[in-house]
Length: 64
Image 1 (cartoon, rainbow, N blue to C red):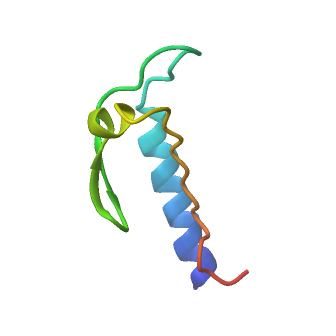
Image 2 (cartoon, rainbow, N blue to C red; image 1 turned 60 degrees about the horizontal axis):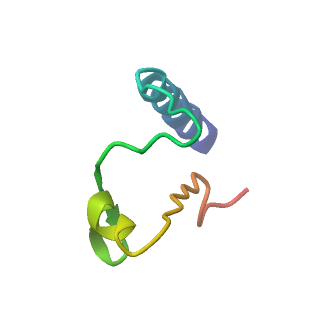
């Protein structure tokens, strides 16, 4: 059952990502607000402090 849920999540993420436009090297990322463990983070505010790296771990805290 977990594999079916994971496969569904991957399919949905792929479909959503296919609508996104790819950025070119050196191009600025569009502004966004994202949830985090410290509350919501707004890109424009964080970028003022220095370079930003956005990491996403799909399988974090999962078995297998």
